[in-house]
Length: 165
Image (cartoon, rainbow, N blue to C red; front, side, top):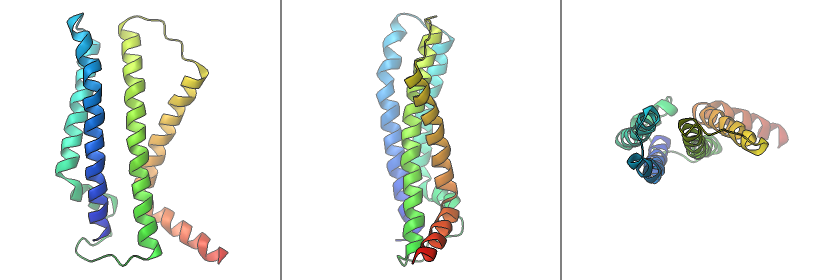
């Protein structure tokens, strides 16, 4: 298996988890529909629909996404599992895991704020909630950095390991 094929499998797993997260949010969307429909209902529907569409697109095109993440890799050649390829693949996997967590946390905070604004409820965000929101932002930024910058991070790790040995 090549690095691209491994990342494509992980991307498909991410697609499944994103679909399940979106499916899990569906009952919270459907239950208030019997009481009232307003602009926030349409925004929530758009978010759910985009979650389904993104998960389906990721499922259909995992190889294309993997090639964008690892542009200098060859799809046909087998990976000789050296330290560089293991570290690079592991960093991308870690980035996809953080992205999964960030999307999950973001969807929670988005729906929380959406319903607080829609019900004209006074929103008092506790300090722990603020920290959780900041952590979600940091998770998202870190996941994007890990996914897109895996090669540079791997080179940095290998240079650092070379100095220690």
